[in-house]
Image (cartoon, rainbow, N blue to C red; front, side, top):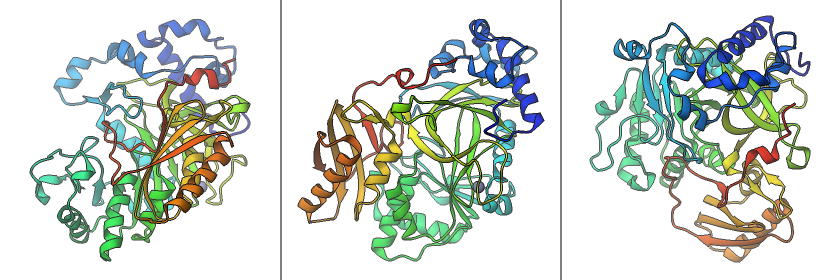
Length: 438
Ligand SMILES: [Zn+2]
């Protein structure tokens, strides 16, 4: 067994059950020939199997993922499950999934113990405000503004009903800040780029903002630039909660800043990148869900890269499951340096995050060695800014990198509703960057 991580015997038992259940299903039938069989160690059996892609989900949905004895039609009729569409992040593949609210809630609850603040504040009845793109969650109303009570659902308040934050007027942002004061959420769950925009407004207007017990980030990679803008306004603890519609809650950032695996709800395998591209400590995240009665996600490629914590220990004391020192960003947001080596979003963002008074940026790579940075900023010393950005990016991409800068008043999110920080404008096939399967 993999000695690098600490797992309980139950974890291996659930891993085995998930493998056996999956290989009996239509979606995974063709994978059986890769399984070395029950005589082998469970981790070796997992490592020998392919990864599940969104394309596979589309091909085999729903019957290929539903275990024997479950009737999807009946489940839909009696309300046990729904079909939900994912917004299709940067890779733009829209996928329909089976949504089991009870399973989702239990996956969320088990993630709460991985952070001291969620462990003490989240009860399941706590008032929670959500600042997200209405395309991802909540109620959409781009033309008319929805009143407070039309944006309530159970214990939640959706602060935003727009699909594009460029539609936010000062009046709407005032309203959001006022509603935080009135609603007094224990937890504010936010898309980081949207919260950063609200915080730029609050800071410029010198508005005192209600401080929730915790701010959790979801939906997007939290840019260090955005975190700094949020920090100007909020003193609340911040934590990233990492999961997907397909797989529930996978990792939670603890109060010490590392990411702990939600071992009660899922198995995680990290398939390393080749050494020259940042491996073996950076790799792609493959998730196998536990105990979802309706929907068997097995080695699902969530599309993100993670950095495994070298020491596999954390000042918070939690020591079971995989510990990550960072999420490195989505694979579709990885670019290439002038020598063709992979550069994760986190490396770009860490560099851009050190540049003062930048509101937003987006880096696009149009060809090998050619990069364009779009930026919005109030800074006037543009020559110095340009020099600074070029120097920092050449340190990452190489001295031969051609870097041009375009100034924009405002950068909009992509059609998915999510904000893009970096991307190549040509396809990159992740398989070529990964260590081959054994
Ligand atoms: Zn920790």
